[in-house]
Length: 126
Image 1 (cartoon, rainbow, N blue to C red):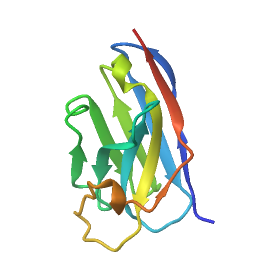
Image 2: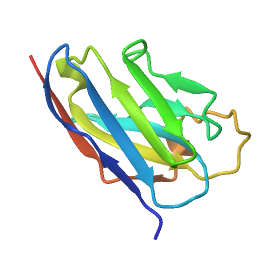
Image 3: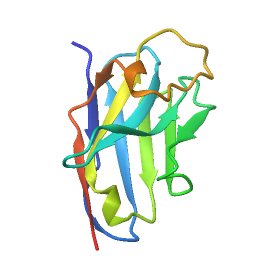
């Protein structure tokens, strides 16, 4: 069964940085994204990237602080998070949109995603 595996979560102080990684088990390249879900809130998409890697999108709440990237040779995707805030505390999930798209397409709606990893906790202390 194909799956996604996140790594890199943990605890950091406000203003710090953290890098998350996602490794899909399959070899087909798909558009991907990073979601987060804080206690009592719905899961929200915070960053997404096309399968070709040239196009990306960010939620306003993380723009200019988070950077999504991917290495298609290794089939991995990362999220570099800087200037972290306590409100960034959440479980972070990577997701895949397994529909066929042009290499520059970036899925920006939650419903476009078809599978997610198990999540990794990010806690930002004040």
